[in-house]
Image 1 (cartoon, rainbow, N blue to C red):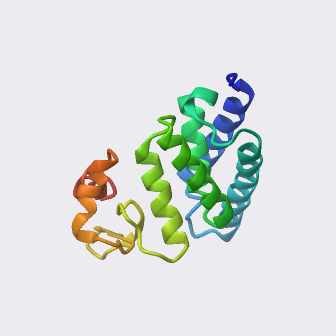
Image 2: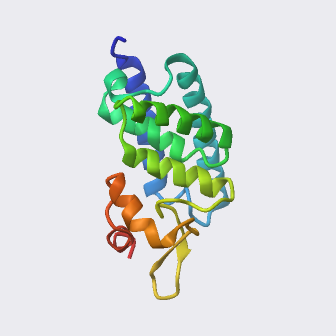
Length: 168
């Protein structure tokens, strides 16, 4: 399959817009206008990712380059109000991982995100629900909390304690 520089550019621009809104605090801030702008952006990106998946399947690094493949993953991660998009991205990313064309780490994060959005327990403890009074992150419930570090290690994610230390 030929390299798709056009898709790579588009995905990179979408990720940059996502990042810009996230760092300005609009995504999760108190301002309803900012929150609405975030929802509009992620919905528009989710719709476009669907079109891309219809056209090429999962946009792998071989097809669009490492940065754009990561951008596609980020767009899927943030499609929280479009479970159909997340579920489809998850299935396609699973296939890409099985074929050796994508990483298990990103798949684990997307799997947890999708499970939490479905109201189910996560597997790898990658999704944080909130922050305790002492400032420590509180993960969404996990299916097997006693195995989280073992499962994380299996997909190349740092131990849970190291991961949450980043948020403190």
